[in-house]
Length: 84
Image (tube, rainbow, N blue to C red):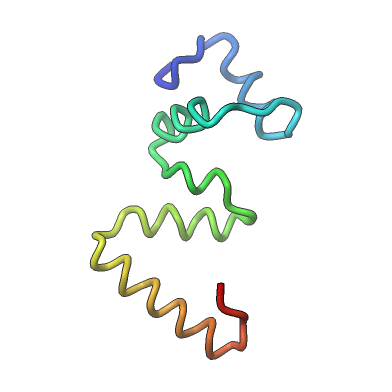
């Protein structure tokens, strides 16, 4: 397996990570993210929607990311959401 985990144990191990039975270290999380082709930050998102947004942003150029973030910040400000 690309993440450096033997194929026969990968499914069980990942399932245990997903269900918080086991915790993986940051290096393992990074290898899993790389193997799945997704940003590491998406693993730490509190909702699926935030994870989806992180993954979508990662596909854009830095310039496009800045534009999208600025639009999101403006939208959040207009909705009355507190600033970070």
